[in-house]
Image (cartoon, rainbow, N blue to C red):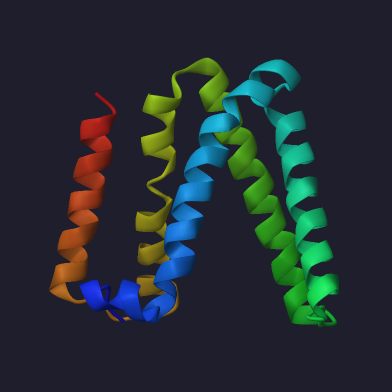
Length: 146
């Protein structure tokens, strides 16, 4: 899969969704500073994650795309939910203690971690240009943190 200039125009590789996600998550993680400072990091994580679940359920029910959960999926959902809750709570604690401009870039090393998990646990192949891109992401995060 690639991200060539024509991908945006043609909608390949979920590029449109990725751009929407980037814009909305950028606003979401920036705006978390306000409730996390007022309500506390973990309560903010609980409320926002519950809201995410509620909105996702409404969309799934409204579109008729709600599917039953099997045993393997249920176990994964519990693990993913725990990871998300702790991750968002830790991020919220970080932005209460320090500037979003410092904590945000460090927290968003997540794509690098995701790629490494995919490489080593899912056995996905990476090309040399993808490794180079990972290097630039890490370099950018370091540069933003100073």
